[in-house]
Length: 616
Image (cartoon, rainbow, N blue to C red; front, side, top):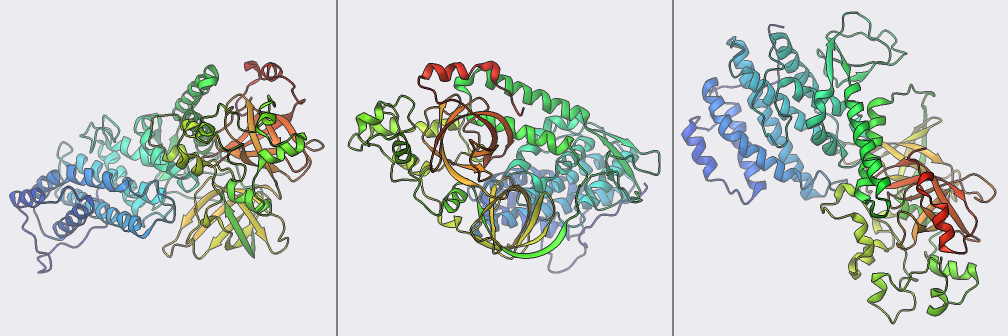
C-alpha cells in the first residue's frame, strides 16, 4: 500500500482562516484560556484547531503546535465526557450540547493528525520519523469518537472505520504497526503504546456489539481493553473464502470487524484479516472465576458492586464468545404498542396500580394483628424488625413504610463510591430511604411506540420520540398492545440506537407473554436484612402448581438466597437455585419452593454453601 486516502479539510490562504501559525503565538493563546471553565476551553480550542486545519502550515511546525495542544485537549475532553457518558438517555439539552462540543473537538483533532499523516506520506517520510506516532494519534482519537457514539447509542460516524482500517493497514504494510510509541495518555491508553494495540482495542470493543452493551459499559469495556487488547491476534487470510464462524475485519471497507456466519452467501472481502481472541476469553474467564470465588468465600460480606461486576463479565464473555445463527426470520409488522421501562413501573401497572403494601399483606395472610408486639413475634416475618436502622428514627410509627411502595435503585455503573452499594439499604437518612421506597417516577408512564418486526425470540420497536423514556440496553421492558390491553408482556432491551431527531429503535428479547406482581424479601443469604422489594413472577401462573421464574432488582440477591414471596393469596418460601440472566437493571432466577421453616436454624441447614452454583 503505497498511498492512503483520508478525509481532511482543504488548506489555503482563505481570508476566513485568521490564525498566526507560530508556536509562540499558539502558546500564548493556550496560556490565556479559562481553564476553570472546561466547556468554554473546549469551544476555544476547537475554533483554534479548526483554523489551523485549514491553513497551509509546514508539517514540522504543525507537529510542534499539536504537541502543545494535545495534553490540554486530553484533559478538557476527559473532563467534559464525565458529564454525559453515564447520564440517563435521552440527554438533557445541556448535556447534549456538551456531547456535541466534545464530538466537534474530537473531529478537528483527528483532522489535525490525519493532515500530518497525509503530508508525511506524500513526502515519503522514513519509518523512524514522526509518521508512526501521527498514525497512532489519529487512530486513538478516532477510536474515542467511536466510543462516544457507542456510549450514546448513536450511529457510527461515516468513514470513521474506513480511516481507522486504512491507517492500520498502512502501518502494517510499512512494518511499524508494532513499533513502541509515546502513549497519548499513559493512564488511559495501552502501554507500551503501538499502532497495533490502539487498533486492536477499538476492534475488540466493536466485536462485543456495543449497541447491545448496557449503559456505561462501552466505556468500562474500553478501559479494561487497555490491558486486554494484547490478547488479540491479527493474521492475514491466505484463501479467498472466509472460514465459517470466524471473526474478521476487511481493511479496505468502511465497516467494523464482523462475524463470518455459516450462511455467507458468497461474502467477498478485499483485505481481510482474521481475529483470534481465545486469549482474551481466557483472561476474562479467569477474572470472572476470581470474583465468583471471592463472593462464595465471603458470602456474608459479598459486595453488591462485585457481584454486578461478575455478572457484567458473564455478559461480555457471551458477547465475545457466543455467536448464534439466527434461527427464525424477522417478519414485518406494524402494531401500535405501549412500553414501560424497569421493574418498578412494570410491577405498578401489572398490579393495576394497587398500592404496594407487602407488610400488611403478610400480616393478613398470616392472620396476625397489626400491633408492633405481634409483628415482632414472627421470627421469620418480613415486617421490618426493630433493629433495622431506619426504624430507630421513628419509634412512634408501628411499622414504618406500610403506606409506601418499595423500589430498588442499585446501579453499579453510576456508583462513584468505593463503599458497598448495599450500604444504601442500611442508611439512616430519610432521603435515601424515600429514594429506595418511592413510587414509580412520572417518566414511568407507558410510552406509545410501534412494533415493526418480530420473530420467535422477540420484536423490534420504533418510536419517533423518546422524550422522557429512560432508554438503555439491559433494561426490563413491559409491553402491551391493543390485541390484549389487560396483559403486559415482559422482555429485555437487547440493543438500541438513537436517531438525530431523538427518536429510538430498540430490539427486545421476549422473556414471558405475561407476569404477576409479587413482593419479595430475603430471610437468609445475600440480601438478608433488607426490606420488601417488588418482583415479577413469570409467567402468570400459580408457582405451587407450575414451573415459574422470578425477576428481582439487580444483584440484590444471589444463588442460594432464601426468600419469602408474597402473592395475592400465598406466602411462599423459595430458594434461588439458578441465575438465568443478570443486567444492571434486574436479575432473573429459577427457584425451588421449600417447606415453610418454623425456626431460623432450619433455614441455615437449607442454605449450606455446597448448594450454591453460579449460572447453573
